[in-house]
Image (tube, rainbow over all chains, first blue to last red; front, side):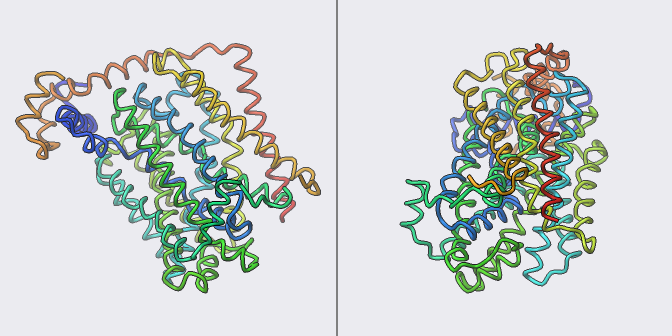
Length: 440
Length: 81
């Protein structure tokens, strides 16, 4: 860092830090929290992306209000465990996730981690644009206009040249994920059934066939995916969180998990009428769900549902593109901050928009098997999580990186539980694929 | 908190801190981002960690898990098609 020639990134980060210092000095706890929240809420609500909301829709329509309602709460608690680690890693190391993996484990393992990330990110981005197109299609917007419009909104968010501005724009969009809450209320759910499911985890799905296991895995993949680790750690370090900001980072992540859980459960509840009325929604896309729900929640409710899927795809496309660009910049050791202008960080911004543009273009290819990709993407994300969690736990326990901020035995226990749980879920999926007649 | 930071914050007021005001003060930037600068230097000096045989086994097992699951997904895709 040069005293004589500070760059924009340093000046912007210093301005943000001065405002935080000011808030601390003046005892403004709410203002301090306002300044420091962002990465956690964004990553959690961003994870309620188009395929995730479709997974929850499929869950509600195929299983109603039962086992999966408390199950989703548990999956978001597991997501919090993983994401809290990224807050500490980012605040203590001031580095991104990809950079730490490459630095501590070398190019060989770093390349594997990057292949997992980029592969799942590209697939997931395609499905985000599927959601955007499907949601926009409900309102009669043509595919190319939906893709072009989404890319324009993304560009507007990215080109603010200030991480703070990007974050606030993205947060505003992300909060629209809560549109599923009024949709759930419009479905006039049986609140007794909701309470019963939360207390007793029932009704339990009858039989664990391959379809149930895929829904199970898709719901896990709807809350825990590799890109979340790379995005939040990158955002925490780009935002410039200091070590003493870790408690606020935890609160930020907890708020995000809470809001995302609320939206996810609301989505399950909103589509439960399809289960009650025995509608076969197993092959439904976003638009079909919205149409099918109209008799139960009205035209306005159907429109809100479609808007929710569109928003879910858009916010996730922003977050996932950013995670890819952060990883690219960290690995190639090029400038990678949203506080930089395009001129100062060409590679970073080009990767950001190129990844999004390519994924959006795929959606416009006639005959591309989009519904199948949407179905499988969350499953694939879960299957690539165990090594991601492995590296995460190794990094957070690395004394040379974390010093006194290493995880204690309790947090390590929780982290191991998440890794083992996700691995076992994957093995269960493998069993049902290799032995299709198996019913547990 | 360093004196320069305090003086700047008090003189600039609660809501009127601007990027250009900060940009013109390189010394203030360095002072404000001291923790970040020191940490970045520390992290850049880190080399590769030595992996014990046990850790290598764990990491390789996780990698084999992903490769196995990739095959399972392909089988699942073929089954569905």
